[in-house]
Image (cartoon, rainbow, N blue to C red; front, side, top):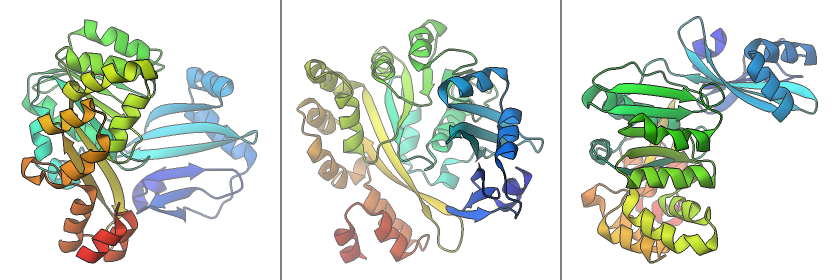
Length: 342
């Protein structure tokens, strides 16, 4: 773990039959030469788990843990069984919360944080920095606004101290059994802002929309790419006979969708690219009428109100010399169009 911190790895993999492996600037590299055997990875798994998480690992085959390192760093740990043996993946959580400028979030995202109600979704593939983006947003609200913020996470990754706001952080499996149960209880806890670590199921999604409708600012994540896919993913989670009603609710409750990817930066490191959808009356109308296929073109023509497509953001990164042309085309949604523009 110390070596992973020293080399700037985002993740540490402990698998039988290999030396420890770190992900550095998005690439897997060996962090030593000593090969881990089955007994070593089982011993490590036992050391990472307390009694509750070890029991969950035996019952479910996997468990997630938040772990503090002696250096002051924190790790999000996933321990699993695979082929009857034990493997662990430890994700390093930065000790210092980043600013909007350091992350590169579009300035329009500031306006979302002062809203009193609505649903803000941060989406993207695993490992793209969604948790960091949300932590930055929550930190800004906590430091600048008098809000009661309730976070529901699995596990807790960033700890927030009380500032101008009041922060209550609940961990799945430790403080509350699961996300649906946490959402059933949260409205009795006088929240202004609710952070959902992940909207995994129908019950949680439905509760998040209801909370957003009833005067709370709700932040959540989904493993989707692109704004239109995110809207469709939410609607498709519901039975067909409820989808028209959900479209109507979402057309009002949704505030914004921020989709992000993490790309290799020019030279070294990584840089985030964002797509931002703001729920204007025109966008709400598209959601209500089931015309989400037109959302992308609406984003393209609405930059003046803070929206931006992923390809436009990537184009700007190339022009700012932050990423290479090859990287831009690899991550572009419309490669032919971006190539022509470049």
